[in-house]
Length: 252
Image 1 (spheres, helix red, strand yellow):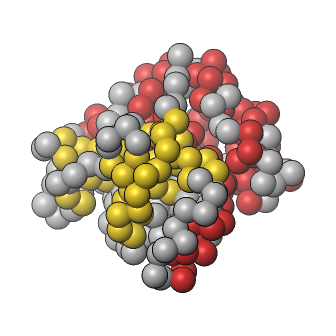
Image 2 (image 1 turned 45 degrees about the vertical axis):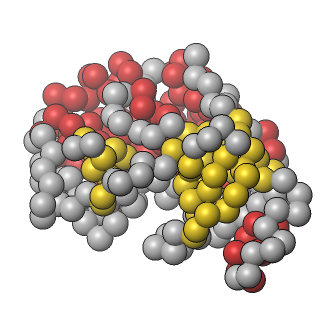
């Protein structure tokens, strides 16, 4: 059973300005530091939902993902923050946000310096084609090296169908054309071999279990969103995996 812990945010430490949505490093009441993604940022709760789903699916297939938590931001938090942009962001983000365990001392994955074995690369490329993740490119890898191991972060740009969900079924059956820009596409020489493994791990039951942990108040921010929408999209996309798999193989 997948469980996401709830923590209370005690202190805003510093913004991470390389992200357009202004995530921040924060201290929580459990004694740990987190990178907090704010519900009041650009794409709102949709980005948090995509990040949560993508991260937990990555974990389920054995890829390394920092622990994710729900970070509660109390009313009035950040009133003493000098930066008005950050003060507004905190004001709009009262309630549940998404925290990702801060990997202190980690370095950004650099494809020029770091290498990934073909099996791992193929799992990551398959996953990102499934999730329609546009944000794992040489320019922005969204991968870290921590203790000499590869960790995935930030799936918030995935599942972009939810910005226009009326034709979700049609979108779920399309290839992911942006896979050609994936930072690991050239290393992913075992895509066909990992397909059965990925389908076995990402079962309809797992999809439902992950979708069920989406907070209701994230869904309530947009009347077009529902747990059923995400479950139906992911289950149908899994069913038509041959479409995005073939396209990814050809993109190499």
